[in-house]
Image 1 (cartoon, helix red, strand yellow):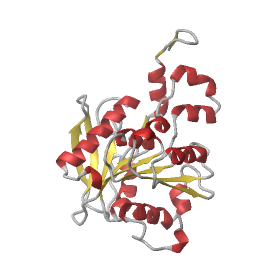
Image 2 (cartoon, one colour):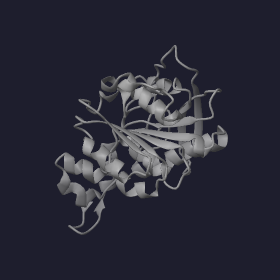
Image 3 (cartoon, helix red, strand yellow):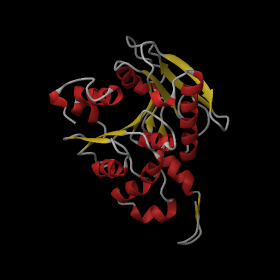
Length: 270
C-alpha cells in the first residue's frame, strides 16, 4: 500500500478493503443438503465476462422470485437451507455465488459483486422470465449493500435487508477504525444510495448486534422509501438473529412478500 499524503489517494487501499470485506471458503461446498426443494445449478456471465454460478429453486405455483445475496463469509452452498426456507414461503429463489467464491470465477471486489448482482437480476428477468415488479431482493449482512446497489432505479417488488450495513465508514467508526476513513473512503455506502431506491424495504435487525449495530438498521430505515418497515429483534446478535426470532422471522418475510395479511399471527407483531 502506498499513501500519498492526507489529502491524496491511497494506492492499494481498495484491495485492502476487498481482502477484509470478502472471506470466501469452500467449507461444505460439496455437501448439498437433501430432502428439500428441487435445486438447479445455473451459470451466466457478468457484464465484464466473469463466469457466475447460482442455485435456482423453482416454484411453478408462483410468479414471484427472491434473489438472495449472502454475507461475506463462506459460500452460497452453506445458505441453501435458508434458501429452501424462503422457497417454502411460496416463491422461487435464486441464490448467487459472488465472483471469487466457490463455483464462480474471478476475484471478489466491491465493484465486481455489484456487477454480479446486475447479472443475477438480468438473468432472472430475461432467462427465467420473472418481471422486475415481481422480484424481491434479499441481502444479509454485507449482502445488504449488494441488494441496495442493484435496486437503484429499478421497479422491484421490494428489498429485504437482514442485519444490514449502512456504510463502510459507519462500520469503521463502530469498530474503532475511524482514523482509516480518509484512507479507504466510504465503501458499501447504502445510505447514500437509498435516495435512488423506490421499492419498499423490510429491515430485520438484532438489537444486540455487535458486528453491524442496530443503529445501522435504524439509519437505513430513516432513509428508506415510504412503506418500509424496521423490525428490531430483542436480544439478537449478528449470527443468531434467525434462531432468536424463531418462526416470526419467516412470518415477517412472508407478510412482506405476500401482503400484510398473508399470515395472521398476533405473536409476531411488526
